Image (spheres, rainbow, N blue to C red):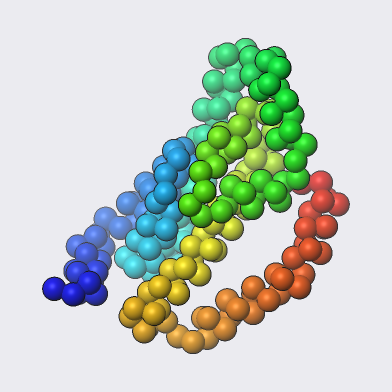
Length: 193
């Protein structure tokens, strides 16, 4: 049996449960340190297609990000904010608040990089929910954009079913980012997000 046939049979088997599996994996990603974001994206795009797949991922991530924030704040209150009183942890948490948001977005959003301590430290630093949600949403947007490029590159090569215009659009977006990325970062700094 070749790999593509196995992949097609797996797609048929998972289709009825695909949406909830994608939501579950996306929900678990913010709560745990795990390497399955590419797997979650592949499952979502294969079983559900792009629009519904990205929707399921966004739903699961939003719930997971909210849960992580609530859990971290509950632990922080339960411990009477001891991490903010200790010398080393206070310096680390102060550094996290002082660091530009875009830096957190890029570092947390890097694929296959263990960033759970930073992701968990953000709510312990008394960061506002708005800034926390923007930081993690931006990092997951960055992560899933990188995984999308990887997914379409790998499966487009294997199955030869991805239209050429997709790669042209992705390359144009990358070129725009290269030319205007610095301007966008300056605007983010000015708005002090």
